Image (cartoon, rainbow, N blue to C red; front, side, top):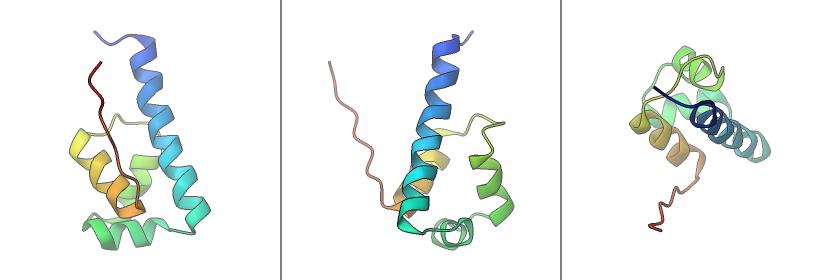
Length: 73
């Protein structure tokens, strides 16, 4: 079972991607074209109603020009 923190973490990460896309002037249509996803699916990603799969998150991040780095502790 997921904790409240884990649920909030993904929402925060998607929100950060949306903020970066907005600042760069990248639209959902632009993201759809770069990823091959349908625009309604991109919209659903940013709606924060569904937890995205990791591959979808990473593909959208790449389309926006955001690099994701994982550090080992």
